Length: 279
Length: 275
Image 1 (cartoon, rainbow over the protein chains, first blue to last red):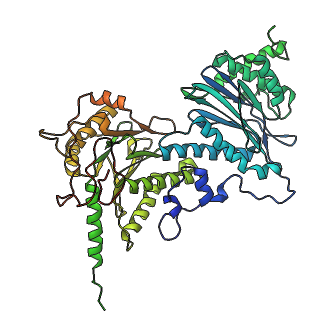
Image 2: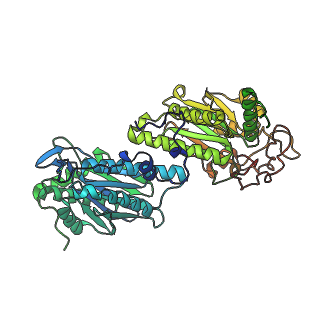
């Protein structure tokens, strides 16, 4: 571990220094080598790292759903069948990653510590916008690597206790932050997922209906995008689904998601292209 | 040319210890005790915003008495150490023992270094385990000494009457409600209400209470809300606040602010009241 002792037996001054309630800032000043984006790649280097792909999110009155497929690819190979791309960031928000898996996972871990660290130091949580902006800063730090092909594009969703609704934030590789209404999708299969969301998602739906819509959207993404994994019925690998409401972020169990997925797949047996848009 | 006075190392250490003890004795006390489902931390604290008890990590809590700015610095140090260790290794590798060692080193070095005033703090690092036997409660004093405690412990101002009460009334395996009542009743032993016989009664707004609850999934630390406390203690009106305990020689320092009023907490200043 990065030793916390400096040889005098005393904890280094950085630990007792006044000032920041940000873990990232503390890490940047004390152990910058532990930050996800502090890697120097030689110019022109090409790193073949696994990529994670399609993430979808959609809101319903009083909350938001986030779901992700389970496939990681490396070139034309499937690197992992049951990778997780959706993570709880804290009690009331989730973050997910599309792009270079390794860096995305590291960034997610740092983001989780960042939010908890702030909460412990300050005795209160960041606002949802505050959390979304902190994530922005982290992506901005990764721009150098993104230029060399190691891009990470996260999506952030959470329940906002002030407006009492679920909100969705998307990002670009430069750290630009965009708030989305109703639904959004990122990753290589997102074009197809977004088409499905557009046809199937309605603002007044309840949480269960929205979960079903996100599963439909992931099915459509997997249908047309080779880097997105479809439901793996033989191995019972289902999408990761989080539902966030005023009660907090709750991950649906495999049994619950499995039931939805099986019924969606069942329908596709007779209608491979999925439900038709309402007349 | 004048020869500097010789002061023996023993005398220097004794003076420092007396100084730190007096500072701590001015503050209000805190109690930490094990109950059937975890560890309970109770402090007499008039401030709703400045905490004496807080979360350090998933299963680790911190409680302190003494000078606010000093123990707040130590608290932040603990959170940074824990988060750094958890981030660079794994969450399971963050232990109360590691933190207690870091605190012991820091407090000990400050205490014995020439030209530095000792910290006027006493603190506890508590870690809840899978069962009562694996709970760990470390008590740290101003000079960096560490003690491994079991059952209950008291720190702060007038600890003798509180200790005496707990010695005859504490029993292992109490429910959280009983444990809160025991702890609050014990804290009432310190200081006498104006014109009243017996211990002080304390209301929810004079207390800061938190638990490390074994049954919780990941983050075990939870504060007990005012409403929950009132439910446990009953909404009986509190007695008048006791004056903050005086220092050992029976005098307040010549300079310094008044004893703390309800809702106000001094955060620094020479000889000021300790939390």
